[in-house]
Length: 578
Image (cartoon, rainbow, N blue to C red; front, side, top):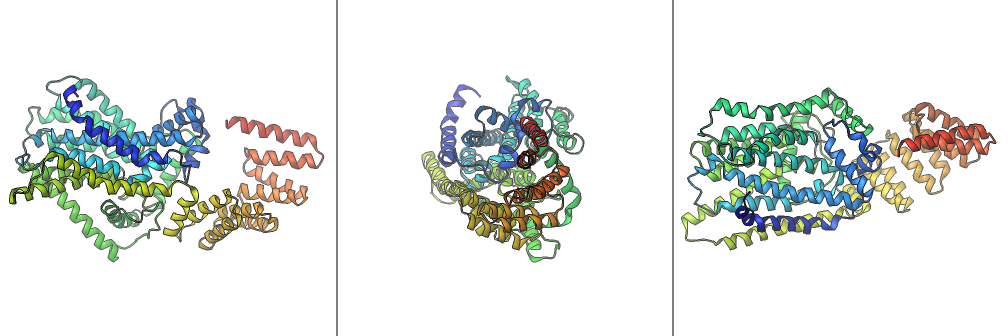
């Protein structure tokens, strides 16, 4: 980028960063929620940077970023949110640069309609739409979904470098550095989240589509793209062959492999047809956003919702192919850009919305990367309509008016994003919103109950846990947590009953046995307490809390040697987890 170009881009970049800050600065002190506890606060692996060598795994750079956050600020949430906001701002700039690079590629330069409308505004309009859209809030405000936003940053940066290399292939500086960095960043993207699997193929897609008629022979073009294609082996290698380090990473990997073999690909694909219609609705009309949708699983293609969704989705996809074909045969900026936007959406969402089963069928953060393509399509459509209006009437607008129109169009989206962010400010407001929109899902009631318990509102907590158990009476974990709420409310007998129910459901439930033992201890029944604690240790000898409880129980029984042995074991386990 030369100085003149940088000056030309400077206002747009400042607006993008300002919009990002205005929308998300209020989230800086929001608390941890949902999976943040599993991935961050209770993930002891991230507390030691030495665990991150050698690099491995499909979530490596996400975990590393959490580890760096922890190293710099512990569990202070402001640091985690600040990084998420910076990543989103950077992604908005990368989207802007990528779309500008698209329009400077070989095929776009030959477009006959380039002067029909001020299409040079499209990259700015699309990137501002990407930055301000409220559907992005889950990927930015929810700390854990840094996996999605950071992977997107590597994804977009790789493609920006690809266009930088491609435009300077025959002349220009930095082409060697750009070419060398491309596959490296592609691997980084795929070592951040699995959605990046499509990245090498998108680079090849752009190469074949946009550089028609270059002096470089086709065979040489293919050879040049081989390192990028080779990077596509990263995710299969880590997911199916190499073990990841860390308890959480190993658990996630095991769950991913389990989902591949236990969930029906057929039912998942049919459900995703309907889910993609919901995604498109959210992009066009972002209302009733929800963290955990109560979404039905479909098992028949003839179901009206599935069949109509298929017709709708296939119609949009075919339209994208038709736009690309038409724009390729007779180069047209509007048709090419719109077609690329549609294909980008379907390509980037394909990893999570196809035949690869994932336990949760819909999440808004899965739209983060695909929404860049949707933004390109909508922006192109707007300026194309203006181009048609301009050729058929005397209606014209000056560049200043277009700038104002773009900002005014983005303002309602930004306001909606700020409004949506407000839901995340407090655990109770967040989980109450979830329970209101998904009353039939257990996790919402459980999380809301925990939030009430954290405030000392035990009656409300008990009511929410009971609601969760009405939905799923066999949820042993919810029964243990209901028992804990009873204990906190001073209802020890009711708590013990819930712990026993949990053990009946799952005899190997360590926490149910440990907590039942503590209830016995409170009632002055140390022998029964010790029996439960020992049973818990047979299930998990590295449970620090149980060793501590045995120290207390044996001390009360007047057995100092046994008490001291368990206290030493408690200290050893705690020290290992620091």
